[in-house]
Length: 155
Length: 172
Image: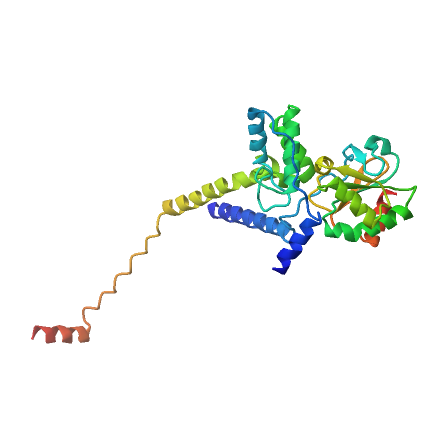
């Protein structure tokens, strides 16, 4: 309650980040491109939100910049390059498929192929057959004990 | 032979992963990298609040410059303002200090400056255009630019006198 009152007092004194009007939207086709590009750029002060979806002031300013660059006729790659030059690859919500970051895209496939290879090799490997057990040594014919057993059995 | 191939591949994968973990430990995945150190400072033409004249950055080359991005609603900016006023007075004639006010109403900015002092010129960036050009992610952020117009460093926290002196030494 006290916090709410303090916040209200602070706002009443103008001690807050004002809502920015932003630039006027472009025509429908170009504005759709602005929004599509904005969806692929990361808001620097949010948690994984695009600048098209973030209400933060800096994201609004960045979307204005996208609008300005689209109006100047820049290509998508040029617009992404503008933000990467200032905020690094961090600015891109999807890592680029080139250089070191291409490993991010390749590794899952490579690991899958490696795993399948190991399974195939294991399945193809012939199981080792156990050596046949040695035949019991024949009892000597003149074993007196065996003779006694046979005799008992016949009775 | 085949067994050695499998072991080698497993070792390479293991050490690869260990390297990735080693590089990742201790780094903040949410930190925005600073990319423009060593590059030419983006040019700007922007209104000076006290005189209303347009300041062209091209005319400022030849002297080291400090650009401080701030806003009226930012608490840490209020805390560092005396440090900037002090440094601007101490290095007067050797370093040009400029404040760039972002995301703030013009009238609120004038009122704020009247209250806290205006020891160096303040420039007004109502749509944060210059801020985005410089790769700003929040306020306060301070750029140190040498006399050739090259960005030498950026400090993304409230300035203290020791840090200020150290950063200024790099551009003088």
